[in-house]
Image (cartoon, rainbow, N blue to C red):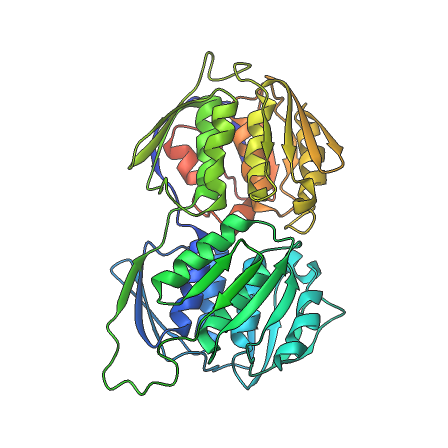
Length: 436
């Protein structure tokens, strides 16, 4: 699918989409909880749908009522011999340890770019936990056979915090005594904060010792013969700071935008987009219920200051911030390029190559990305490289470009933000999605 975007002036209010980070964690925790969990504001992205399918394969019963997702479960009790993670990196890294709680042999597979992501972590860690594993040279598909038995272990957290998220949840569900996970060089710490916060909402107890040691206490319900059916647990899935970052940058570039539904006290890493916007001199009005962005000058064209931002713990902010940096006068620097290698694409190179087509020079230097902003962008024919955040980044940059922009592979946004183009249109953007 292709999206055609004309230079546009946007204005209005929009509700941020549901967070796929929170939604997938909520699905995993609902699977492990005996009884009914009711999830309000459930996500509808491809990654969310994959999580729902996985917990169904692992034994959960699903029903949608009045816009809420009801999950009934008695824990991990697989009804299929295989699960498919779609293209979700969090899906494979979180659900593999959870699926390993079962004694049944399960094959875990995925699609698209996920097939090439490195998973040697499981080859190293699972045998230590009593889980038999066969992988495709450290990649999907994985064949595992548990049950996983929590024990004191040490892991490397430098590739992704998502591996730790999976172990924390699985350990908390199965531990019969206190166990410790020691972590070296943990990246994306805010995502672990989100994991621990949501685990706490479900009653799990984990002590975080400076992100270097995590003490997991036994599940208080483990081994109990519950006489009555547990009271249903209801929770709202947070709105998504990752998707909202594109809306906020769009407002800074091309018009006044108000984004509602966000929790300004959220544990989500991408809440840090507010820091970057402030560094660039973007005018923000922040209240408990909404965030309003008002552009400077001519829709922000050439009005913003170059900024220096460390995205090591929030690498998903690279794409929207590259679009913002293109409309700054001077060189903006974003740290944390090493975190972009194993995404849906090699995001550093993809951003460099696609934005070059739009007249924006990007220099990669060690762990730094230097965006040479001139305050202007050229409309061009670009490609998402099947990466949802690249598609959204190019679309946002196109809103004030000097001509039409065509985005090939535009359907990639379905992975995290299916309504992205419709939301841009609601704000007044000229977006067409012709049927090829």
